[in-house]
Amino acid sequence: MILCTGFKRVLAPCLENIANQLQLDELGRPLLNEDYAAFGRSLVTASCLW
Image (cartoon, rainbow, N blue to C red; front, side, top):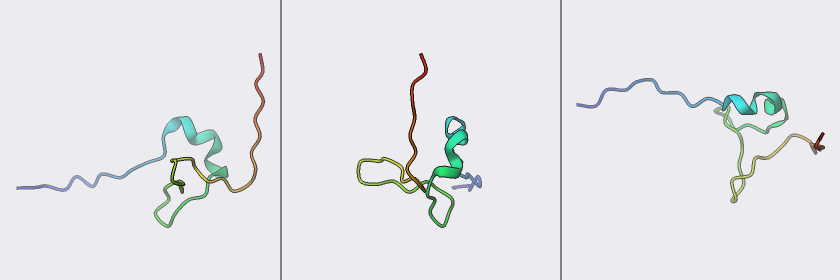
């Protein structure tokens, strides 16, 4: 017997700060290219603060 749990995939907490910059599919999952890099809505730049 197989029971469905209602499992739902959610965005990892470590990505919450950039969630508004990610392109999502119709199910709300980040769009990924063939090397699993996420597509962004716009160019996002980052700098390291030491």
